[in-house]
Image 1 (tube, rainbow, N blue to C red):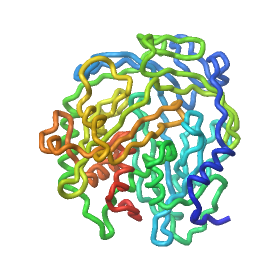
Image 2 (cartoon, rainbow, N blue to C red):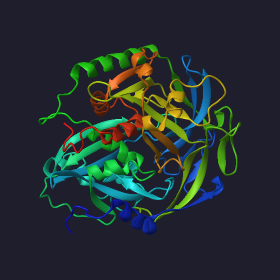
Image 3 (cartoon, rainbow, N blue to C red):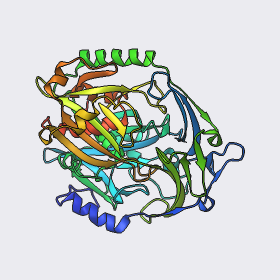
Length: 443
């Protein structure tokens, strides 16, 4: 069967897939977590094969931050996966081949995912499961004959919970007349409709949002020239901040993560805050392997992630923040204006949080709940907001670590791998706020 463009409502199709393919997830104590165990001596939570990922301890020293030092569990997944979307032009519009994918930690079950969403262990079939569909379009050499690579960049993921985690984000364009077999559970969806679906709670998954952000504000082929000077200045600003910030993070045995205790069915902080590590048994007949067990990280509170924006002159500008996180390879990446948990400790409020939460409805351009990586996190949800900044905020000089950046510049920085995953989700939303849509390419 040859792939065809979907004419019906993607949400109805997704609901039908959810009724058919949703995971059955059951909490289990660690003693029943088949294939996983605590390593003697370290207490690290590891897979019997030594592959996939591990939960280890991390000790952090951050003299510049609001908390000078702490310990925590962290997910160590050193391999690099592939997140890839096939695109093609049809009827004058860009269409994306999306997958209806169930993950054990998803809110609502099945969500729209990239064409390929696979860890290295999965696509090399360490689990002895089924082959990853459409992988050949994204692996080395194969795409040269099948399509044109628009985006290929290593991107970080949630650096508060992952240690040095990066995935390869790819977009490959196939010719309009290419014979792309349409597998069960996949659908071509217009980019304009995907943009609209980003307004809906928990429909487009984190991996798809990360890749789609690379289609925001393209340049070339008759479009706007890349903002070279602004991008260079922003990179200089980021380099200075990276050079000046000191953060030391080193792995330690999970048993030595101070302030955390291991119970029969969870690893939990002594104050019951931040997150827990739990074990689950999963049944998902639509997946490469139909049944398995794994740990998941379960946040204790929802997050708030927001950009303040202004459009007083020229293209939209966002107030970005150079954010230091313990799991990053670099000292900082460009992040949102606000990125906090709703479970705030006592003390000063983070900068601009009250501007975001206290904004009148007329200034709130986007307010949506979106879940994070459902393959590693259980019901991790952030409230994503785009809020027009008050005039006085635009006129004043931002504090250290903050900078106004145009949306096209932010997109260019993202395609260079300098923008964190939370800001990339917001970037994916920005073209739907009155900016040029349906780019056709991302050169």
